[in-house]
Amino acid sequence: KAGVTQTPRYLIKTRGQQVTLSCSPISGHRSVSWYQQTPGQGLQFLFEYFSETQRNKGNFPGRFSGRQFSNSRSEMNVSTLELGDSALYLCASSLATSGNGADTQYFGPGTRLTVL
Amino acid sequence: SQKIEQNSEALNIQEGKTATLTCNYTNYSPAYLQWYRQDPGRGPVFLLLIRENEKEKRKERLKVTFDTTLKQSLFHITASQPADSATYLCAPFVGSSNTGKLIFGQGTTLQVKP
Image 1 (cartoon, rainbow over the protein chains, first blue to last red):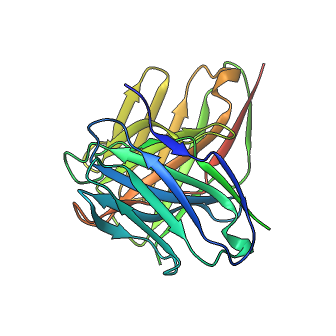
Image 2: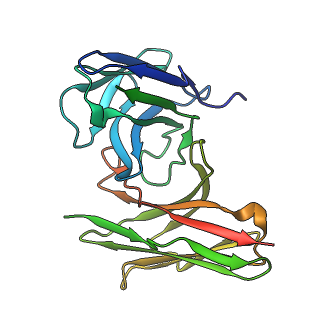
């Protein structure tokens, strides 16, 4: 089975621009979560989608949004980019059969976003 | 507020020794706690999950303990090898089923010297 894929792998943008990141989960996985990872803050939860609905959300401003399609693929959008948005954005999928903390997260390689 | 603390300093040990990594949490009672390994430039990889009613879990050279009274999990790697060098993240599950989420610690970087 193919793993979680994320595109693009690297991205350079300037302040004020917007960006869309894409995530394809493992086949059969219905839950997709997004995380932001920075050296200072570590791995922080952005949001989770399950069956095209946002099921949970972290403490990020409204500039960060996402969606999930019927095939479970997910996109994350960041509008009006700021320098502090430079980070590694990770997507993770899970079967979500139990819907609780027993679900293993399978992470993609991440998208490295640099904001200049 | 909810807080997770892992060894802030990098852990350097000699090959063959046992590495012990600590994860302390405050202000909540997770029903599950997961451990992940992350190599530079890559996404985290799941290692072990332990439930609140389990004191200990083992998988090959790995062992995790979960003390809900102390609010602490310990992660052990026995007979460590240079290939075990990586950052290890603990992640308690916070919230109720279907609406909860994993909260990741900052991670502990382990360096195993040959």
